[in-house]
Length: 388
Image 1 (tube, rainbow, N blue to C red):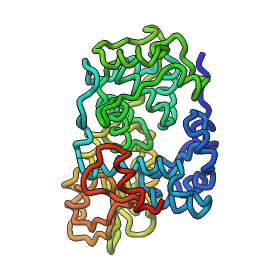
Image 2: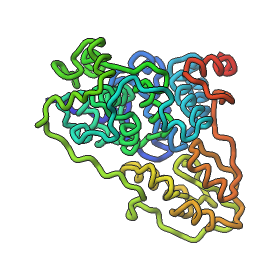
Image 3: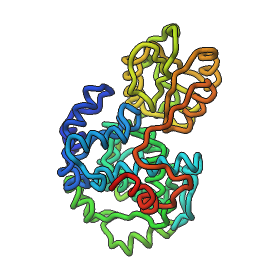
Image 4: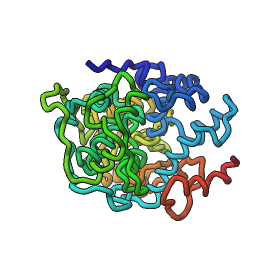
């Protein structure tokens, strides 16, 4: 029997994510940069739990780094800053490649990939404890430690022959912190289509970093040479135990649940500030929430994630508009819209259609004009300019 993960293991000793300024402040206060650098790779290690707040714009990377430097004197070459730079690297690629991030950047190292996630993996019923507990954790919390995300992606792509795009779409929908750039490009990195080198893991890796999820005598209990050969082959190894018990996958919804929508009111008078799922920091009069149906039909969310976003909108906005890009732009026609920003190109279309002023997206590191083909090249470009 696999020991279930405790919330305190998953959320840095804090309760599950709440879309409030108080919850964000608690997470900032709980950051221990030394513990992070020492234990971050362990499933129960000290992580920040800031990713949902970064994804949904309650705080930005520059603000997090400013906090780390002011409170902890963190240098810009610290491991925590380095990981934040990875986030900005993925957004650098998204800003330069657009929908190109959803396509193979390099030829895949193997063959025989399929365009759907097998039912046993979706049900957390592969018979491999480290994979099955990861899936259960993802569904039960809307969150997954980065190491576990890599294990699931590697298993799905290299052993079950799932094309990375199908796996990335599946995982994205269930993550509260689902960020299209970070999630899909991370899957590409694991698949070997981003940098050309696939990421593989073995049972010993799981036993070291997640001993309660250990998986001896399983499909991943092989040498790295054997795993690399499987990655290049076109054969799905199948589930370890076809009769392993599974769980029901939560539905992914292409529109917000009506019972979670904030009360619709008339638009307030005066200038309006648009509050969308990637800019939830602001609160106060003149705030109008917007949900673009076109985007979410392409990228559905779990009810848990809809709840996070809509609870915040309900608390911070005068009213919320839900509809097509065209309908929302019409509803806002003729109104003065104050500057707003987004890291999400899909929502940038709305801001342009509504003739909103578009403020620069918040970044700490420079955004090179040409897309950097690897993080190391990006880091070499931006590191000196960050004052390291």
